[in-house]
Image 1 (cartoon, rainbow, N blue to C red):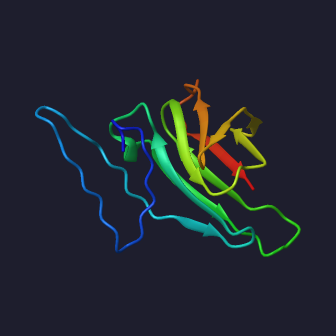
Image 2: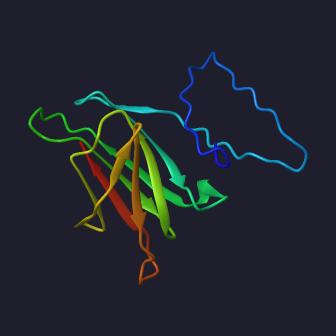
Length: 131
């Protein structure tokens, strides 16, 4: 929920009730949760939270679920534009990179937040979360 800055996990059978005051609004991002099979980590991208049209910021999404038990699972997201990128993850990632450079991230209440800088070139920024 954009205005309320809340995350709600729902089952398919659950509903959300929202009440609006006059001239009030709310934007909802609805996205399915994937499970990284090797680590059983639940994961889904939310968006660049500074954008109203959040769906347009994520250009690609790749889940790497290698069959090798020794390898880590990862998720790569191609993002256009800059800002605070948030994803839901049931566990804290072991690392996070942007364009193969390690970056600081925060993890609170199953929400991973990373600051995506404005790219100096006309291509996507690739954010990689490793579990």
